[in-house]
Structure formats: structure tokens, C-alpha cells
Length: 338
Image (tube, rainbow, N blue to C red):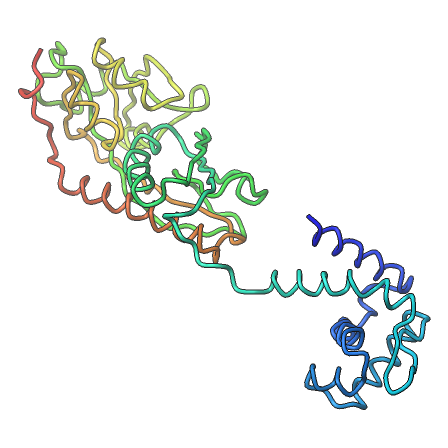
């Protein structure tokens, strides 16, 4: 706190130096003044800075003009600081030290001993897919690191990253704003989901049957169309939407106890089918998949801590991608009979 206070005090001195724009001040003069106040000799200050004696004398002349004070006066074989120079000495030294520390390369990030937090904005579907693997890795590698997960259901990048209120955004994004970077995590695909014992879905589904069923749709806006609706429209078809929800994770329990059906993310549906009486079938119509991305702001691009976290998230995403590729197209309908 003391160093910061002295730094601000020195900045006030700089403002007082001259009423002209700060850009008119040659900041190269400040280390010279610091060396002169410490060495109290033009020649010794020059040797300390690697400058010639005339260069230091010239700098001192400029400083005297800027500050309106002689700063150092002859006293015997050396030089003595004026009262103004003595008042400047301490805040100047602290400010230069603070500046030097700020310009040093960032310290290496040590996960095992780190004690800090990160904020991730994402939707419930991506959180369901990513968090278990990510948290397991955090507990093993960085027990002092904690997460705050904020809900973000939209398909565009929020301003939280630019404002420094979030470190990562995970989800589907229709575009990347300026000043942001992104990397793909895993591709997701739709599967058709219905309850076991559904009177119209018995281990297979045709397109004609599909359009006659009552569907659950996840959307943030009323009457919003999805990519499934677009794929159907290309064939002159449509589906009946019986229920709209704003959260992916509500869909599987509802399907398990009703005759609603849904086109659902495989990353969500497959784990849910291990504990709920659901049948997962291949979609009866080709529907484009979607890529889940990790997005961050360029201000954190080179931070060792953020780079480490992004590497961890990417590792989890690669695991999810591998499991999706290895998964069969049709889920077993006998394993979970009730």
C-alpha cells in the first residue's frame, strides 16, 4: 500500500512540474534525477547509468528548467540536494521501482500453490459436459484455485470478457467480437430422444412419425426457430412444439415421464440415459452439428495463469470430443428397462 501511495504522490509531483501536457515531459530524465540524488555527483551518476558526464549535465540542466529549482548545488567536492530535491527523492525512487516491477515479465504460474479464482460464463448444457472433468483436474493440480460459473444461455459473446468480469465464455457463438480469441472445444450433434415404452417410438423413428409427435424445444425466445425447424422446412415439413424451455437439463427428466420427444444434444442425452428410462436414436433427418467454443479476451492472452486454465479446459474438451466419436449411433434399449 505504501509503494502505491508514493507512486501516486510522485504522479502529483509530475503534474505540478509543469502545466503543459505530460507528453512534453521527457521521462528519460527521471532515472537521471534518481541517480543524481543518490550519488550526489554528476560523474558517479553517469557511471551508474552508463552515460557520459556531459549527457548527465545536460539532463540536469533540463530538470532544473522543468522544475524551476537547482535541485543539486555545489558543496565542497560534491553536490548537495535542495529541499525540493529531498522532497522528490523518496516518491521518485518508489515510482521507478514500481514501474520496473510492472514491466518485468509475468511470474510463472504454479498451479499447486496458486490461490486465486476464475469466472466462467456458460450455459447449463456446456457446464454439465465440461465441469465434472474440469473440477476433477483442478482439485488434483490446483486445490487452491476456485471457480465461479455464471449462467449465459445466449449464442453471442457477452461483454463480461471485455469488462474483466469473466475470464472465459464456453458455448455456441455466432460471431467473435474484435479483441477476442477463440478455440474449438468439441463438436456436438443432435440425437432423437424419447422415453422407453413410448407408444409411437419403439426403437426406431421415421420422418413421418417424427413430424407427428409433440416436441420439447430449448430456446430463449418465444416462437424461436431452431436448426431442426430449418432442416424440416427445406423439405416442406414442420413439427409440433408442445413445450418450450430455457434450460437443456430440464428436458431429459420431462421426456422420461411423458410422451414428449426432443432433438437433444448427445453430450447431455447420453449420460442422462444411464440413469433415466430413455431411448436415444439417430435423427430421421440430417441436422447440422454445432461447435462448442472457448472464448477469451486478448487482455488475458499472454497471462500464464489464464493460459494454464485454457489448456486445462481444452484438454477436457478433447476428451469430450473423443467420447462423442466413440459413442454408438443408437443407445442400448435393454440395459435400463424398468
